[in-house]
Length: 272
Image (cartoon, rainbow, N blue to C red; front, side):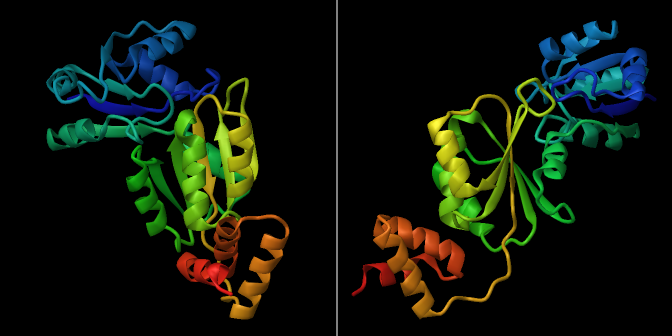
């Protein structure tokens, strides 16, 4: 009976791989890879000639029997195109099937984009929630974000570059423009960049300069705060509209700062 090894591979820099991972990749009977083209680059770099089998989101069920058959004959290594397999990548079904068949499943710790982003963000790391990729559909994304508005733990999420600005706008609207965020791009690669600031600042930055590359978002949790008085809310609205903000923009920003529901602030902004 073989062992299924879950092997973490570099998220960018090929030097970010453990000696144990290289040994297992070299000794395994088969490597099940999410992206064989990407994995071949890694194997060629380290002169590893273990056979590869494509195992990705669109063929994971049809290839399951092949991987299980290989496990009957020896060890199999599962890798994603980057990072830790099974985390927002194919692997769950294979792990369940291997365990059900009595095989040992062994994780090899290593690179993980969410954890790398979290520890470098400057935001609290003692408790966090990993969301995976934010929903593609805007209505679903907004619904999810609204449900997390009061969440005190740090939030981690992946986003693709062409939806980043739209998602930052949705986050700003639901969580408040002053909520802290770290936008982590191309971690461990040549053009690595971590932009720290507020959601409003990040939205403006990437609206002016469209992002490229892999993006991981680290968003600060909700802070416990005393609810503002109505007088303070009215004063803050007046200051912002006097400075040139529209009533809608002012209401959205004050809602994020005051602890008041957005609709209540909008009513005050539209009142006498």
